[in-house]
Length: 347
Ligand SMILES: NC(=O)c1ccc[n+]([C@@H]2O[C@H](COP(=O)([O-])OP(=O)(O)OC[C@H]3O[C@@H](n4cnc5c(N)ncnc54)[C@H](O)[C@@H]3O)[C@@H](O)[C@H]2O)c1
Image (cartoon, rainbow, N blue to C red; front, side):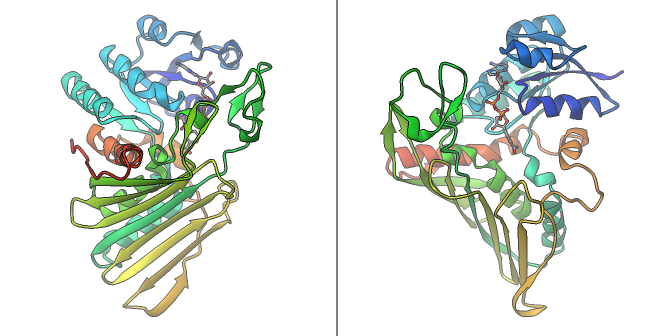
């Protein structure tokens, strides 16, 4: 019998409808989006404007939450309480209280809950995971990462429903988009922290954050550039820098530091698979960096990384799903509090 699935949020979520339909064990029986034209695009699938009504009527076994980040925790709890397993996009939580309530509910209901952190399934991460597990870096002492993405072009919606840039602040009739008003850079840390912790086999135990350029833009508390330092359970360190509202084209950067080797990964354009450079240095191979040619998504099994994520038996449970986002959220909280070090709850 196939799993009755529902997808909420049909922008990126339209791709999840395809991914779930392509899984022979799944059938998408319902979609949910408050925008009627988004429901119309999913012909043949029952559409709902209201999430609770969708849960009550369609009674799905699994809900994919591809809605705006601030909706995720509340919708996760509603879905779990209605008896549905949850696959949720990043960021999955905005506070330690959200995380704790979700973990408790998952354990009480004995359902599955997984963060849809897709970078871990990309070819580059898969290859690095194999080499790191073989011990090529020796003991991994720490990691560093950066995720910088110039999002200034879409900060507001105007009354005609068109996006307006940050520079339009002050024009009449603008509504801030959630990515501008409700996505502090460090809350969007799972694309870098997820792969780092996965490769290191570790988790973060404390978070310290600091912010640069903080300002009020028409009532939005804006954090252009944030840096976090995490201590890990095994005594390592991770530092992350994220920024969205600044003049800096896309960069994804990640480094792993080991006792016998180190790795650096950098992409300067996520739409160009060739715009990735990976270099590795090991004591065994001798001094200096050597290129490790590979592409951004391309996996050794030639499969689409998102399809692998959706098809795989959930490799990350509720506790691991919290490890990838909550530290960033708490580092942002630390930055708001002027750099106070915060203990991260471990589930
Ligand atoms: N992994 C990645 O690389 C990646 C890339 C893009 C987006 N994302 C994540 O995916 C999620 C969605 O991103 P997006 O770009 O599609 O966002 P978006 O804001 O462009 O679209 C969100 C969609 O959800 C709908 N929606 C809003 N409130 C809803 C509600 N309460 N119930 C149901 N639907 C609702 C909106 O009408 C819209 O169609 C976010 O969490 C984002 O961070 C991840």
